[in-house]
Image (cartoon, rainbow, N blue to C red; front, side):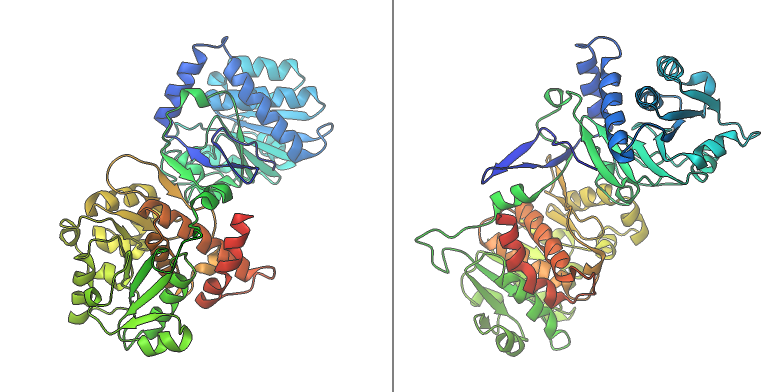
Length: 503
């Protein structure tokens, strides 16, 4: 579906790019109240319904003669669906509203639908007419529950959704998902597309709810001036990333561009060092210093690397450190971690470094720290089950950042970047592919992100840009056939996607 550009526009080289920004339900509700106080009664719902009907018409291609069914709950979400259904009925569609709560359906929307020639039937378990209408429909609008809904679908709604055979468009967000957190705690609608109003909601951008939303389209209903300047969640796009990429000046040399130190690898895992260095060499810093026992393997693959046997503080000046990939968990690994954390430059801690870490290790640091766990590592750091982290990714990345006083990049199907304790939006990485779930890909991400830190980006920006480029590189490496990839393929694709982002 074509996506309407939201209001947070950023430009680069003449291009318009839309950062996706999302606000909590409480914030959206407050903005809607403020806007409705300035508009005639019902005007805001009519704006939403007009945009929803137009999106459905585009999806149908031909409205006249199409069969449309509306699954209608008791709130304003159902009203949006009814008014949109009335607009489609006036254009010649056969529209049937299935009412889950007939006595509490939006009265104005129901009148408008009937006046336009649509019909309404109860979602009665004693009759199969509702299931028949849903099964025959070319398009079904999910107007069961709005953004205030909590928990999964009730049994009757789940039964009716099971009868659907055509495309499903969710009204504002799929029913059964949590708008604020992206959690799915029961049966939920899986939409082919979601038409949302005014602003994105966090749950539309964060798994597992994101997988239920399908293609997203944002309808501008005039809410922007009534929303805070800082969103709860944001997702960078090409133009945003391009504006953050480091660029050498005419007087730059390799040291002015930044030097990143990589403390990684062991006798058992020399490849982790090679892959971390591979990412670091392609991340914008002017030089890479490697410290550890895998120097021979690193030099054999990347002779431009500066190597040192250690300890890290004797290797030479760096502007950022990466520590942890393949490091092991012995006394030498612990000493290397302590040495790096004692430095006065930004530090990225990954993999084995995370397993050796405790909150107290970071309390005395004056420079910024970035932690890059996957769900299992995050669960270990927090002392909770992995499944709990995967179910509630947004809550746990915030908790982890608060507890450790660090920026946290939580890897996974939706990579989240929390900027540390205090206010600020959590960023959602919109790139990536399931093929990134391969050994060593996280080592490449660590090196890449550490290099961006050394080049001068903040931990929040370096993590966001690193995740974005890393995901794009994986897509590039697996295209066009969708074939499996290895971690070194991701590293090799980074220069190409860097050029692509710069346009």
